[in-house]
Amino acid sequence: MDFTFTDEQQQFADALRRYLDKSYGFEARQAIVYSDAGVSATHWAAFAELGLTALPVPEEQGGFNGSPIDMLVVMQELGRALVVEPYWATAVGIEALRIAGAAGTTDSGHAEDAALLERAAQGEIKLAVAFHEPHARYDLFSVETTATQQGEHYALSGKKSVVLHGAQADHWIVPARLNGEIALFIVARDAAGTQVTDYRTIDGQRAASLSFDATAARLLGGQHAGAAALEQIADYGTVLLCAEAVGALDALNRATAEYTKTRQQFGQPIARFQALQHRMVEMLIHAEQARSLTYLAAVRYASANADERRHAVSAAKVRVGQAARFVGQQAVQLHGGMGVTNEVAAAHLFKRLAIIETTLGDVDHHLERFAALPAFATAEV
Image (spheres, rainbow, N blue to C red):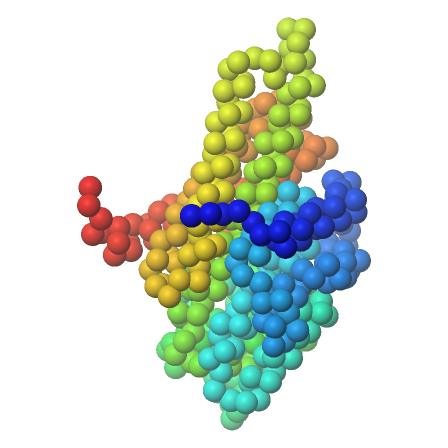
């Protein structure tokens, strides 16, 4: 299978990298992380101008209808630069509107979904999907938040935890139980009965806890498509996270190689020691294997066979998680004491990789998911 990017994809990646190198350096990123907002309106506007916010949006709503491969190109660059803007959360929210909104049963619902997508494409609003609840760990279907129908509207009650960039979002996509089944709902940030607790995570990103008390919501799509749509949306988010991790792995390998050329031991750079050269080759191999499975997952995401999609996505998440841990730990050792300080990018790359490894399922979770698929049980030894 040929994973070579098209000329348009490569040009887009080059343009984004030039912007990030010029305007989103390490010091600029640190200033954003420790600001009160934790994100930058200026950079978000620049992302919209570059076309990032429009990329995943369907053409009918003013977007470019970008494929998972197109999004992979973007996420790799954002991972290299350790970008903390709410792009992943919004892109996953756009996919939720695209998947579940398409199953809508009312013209008014279609119109509202289309309007949200148009505004998201222009960078006017941000979105977030509230995947998890406090008790659920990685189980997407452990949902205790409930929805009660009140005429043509619904009221949500319950709690969501670790909603990435939840406080920065203008609208949330919220899974809840409706008549015992999982359904997806749209909730406006300013809806009455909502409490938001915003905080900074160890990797410099933002997350929030959400609490709903008879909060007004709109049903997104059909009730019976909720669980299947939720799993597909999570798989999309996982593919994007894997792509971001690949970019971060590249940056960490590069930073480590450069540092070993300057760190002196026994009167020479430690990069000359063959044992350390072998270790850095292993780091590179881990990154390349993670890249290959991530690219495959991006291709297979659109497969009509849901098990084939699950197979590729979980395989990629497992390999990315293993690579994140190995490369991160080796990079810290090769940096010495500097590898755990806030003054060098390597420490922040390792933190981001550690969080990616535990987002939407860690290595053990996806190994179990992979092993539970029918193709694994029937495979010949």
